[in-house]
Length: 144
Image (cartoon, rainbow, N blue to C red):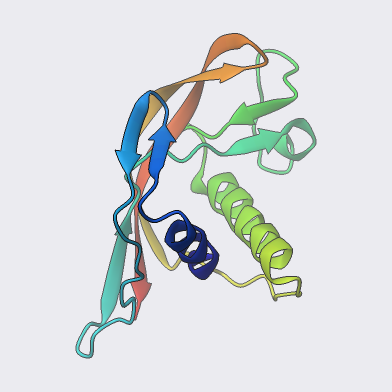
């Protein structure tokens, strides 16, 4: 995916790019080295934007979640155990990997260590209406 984005960015180098109300001129495109340097034992990934995890109604019982109303889904929040957050996030990552690569992958335990940072309300426009969803910020630690 990174290479596909880089190829498209290279194709439009020198042109104006609009993001929202802002316009930029793309001057160059390149990839950066992502190998973990020797000597690093652990890597920390910090979520810079809130992670929104939807839990469908049919999975609420599995996770021991009860709601006041009969919602189609609920958003994970700090009041719940981390299990549904991790499970839904891992399933989503595996699904996206399969779609992108076109190949099956074992469902590994992706998250070795994670730390909840905070919960935030995220304003969102859905179906021509403004709504608020719950998102959370996290730090994820991985062995190099």
